[in-house]
Image (cartoon, rainbow, N blue to C red; front, side, top):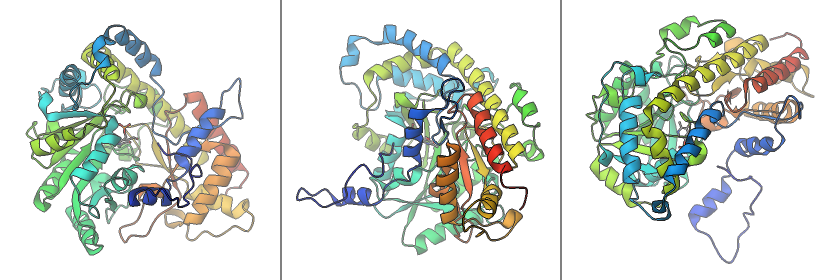
Length: 498
Ligand SMILES: Cc1ncc(COP(=O)(O)O)c(C=O)c1O
């Protein structure tokens, strides 16, 4: 998590820090995370703080805390043993690795999404020896950044991407993150990615002197909330194999698929039902492990963790699954990011309780789906399109260009700087930032994730602005309604031009 951008001095001292530290000090993170955290100290509450802030910029899911917390407390009663006071295997305590092995085999690495536990598909039984447990997927990505790459190498990631990937690869590994953009459909559809798009990104990376060594995808996708089809995954697998690149598949949202047969349909009704595009996009998650029948080639590596599917980001637990023994041994050799043994033992208890997990996953998906319905209905009333639309994860990627253009034209002193109309509307970086600071943060007190750190660009490399990610599970549905009401009230001040 970022610290306040103005918290430290970058002045030289006679006690010099490393070049790495100087790089970090000179490239502060985008302030959106810090703004979100500040907002949590003055949070909206309908009764006690109706003008308070709505922090919706960080991908955390608070909707099912009431289910997880009691189960964790119950687990703590038997899990907090004397063993918790000692070191254990740096790649994960044996009991935890056994529990994760069973859990992933039964719930994640199967053919069907969502209600995996009730799926008739045969699970693939994996081996604890192929797992490394660490302090969240972030810690694992940091490890991969130094173990898979040389400084100056690059990792290719379909655009837009999870905003912290840039930091995860650059901070220790000095690895560049380079976007892959489909030529036909700039974003909103990872299914549109072709081998030609991948070849083009590969060639651009080489031309820039940043040799690509890996392709990384997040499936389900952050920030779009869409899912890669088996056909698309096959294409990416074959392409990475042919190019000799590692293929990192981040499945941290695998169980947060909320549009599936049998799921609660309330949200669909509130949001106006399923759109046409939803019916032709995949709505069922396919794990790359299930697709390969658990025979992973040595270039394929999968990530999962507790932060998203269980809303347990504070527990700091992530897992790497791979059949590449050399990589596993190298990752295991850096055991500096261990998870607390107490957490490991508590989590082992919870993940071994498959009845609880099945119930939690199903109920959480229904809650996320309902929350998305509230947001989708509110945004539709304001005329803000949702890209995708999402069928998984806990955020929506929204096109604010029209809204920003109207603000610029009608309310912003000296404004009216927009170019183009409709789909071709172009918002400048400066305008996106001004809208973020002046309208979203200061006036409306709704904190979204700006698209700036998500590598949003067109196939020719032109950066694109005016989109935001809304992490709608950070607040309860009444907070979401308040967010949409504030947007609507602001929108009504602009008239209905553009
Ligand atoms: C796609 C993706 N990968 C990894 C992470 C980081 O997860 P962790 O909390 O396990 O470090 C996030 C967090 O938002 C994410 O969205």
